[in-house]
Image (tube, rainbow, N blue to C red):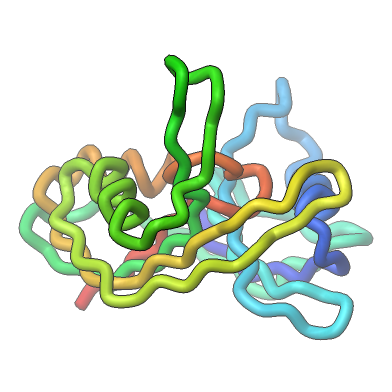
Length: 179
């Protein structure tokens, strides 16, 4: 896996999604093997954290400023600080209607269900609206806290696959730092 810092010249989530794809020009069958999260907005640009299975290559609209390879191997019982920007939702009517979860305690319960295999303690949450010219505005939530790995395989899978919906719009990237 690669962890990269990139600069995108757009605040629109759809344009960011398209720009990230341009970093992987030779991807066969257009399989998504990356997750990203906007870390900072500066003027007309965004500083983005990108996790991918292949190394990204800068192009005209997106610049890779740093990139390093890392391992997703976790140890059972280890503690990590975590950060996750996610789109907490629940399905109504047997999955036909999806609604956002607005209540903070319900959002934390949602996160604990998604991170099976980890003991999660959320220390901070912050929600914000994310809009795109091609879709509705969505309320993303930034979770931060401490995570203890109980089942390394399931937490590693959450790291690689992401958590929740709207991964194409910059949600779902779980970042861990060993304590």
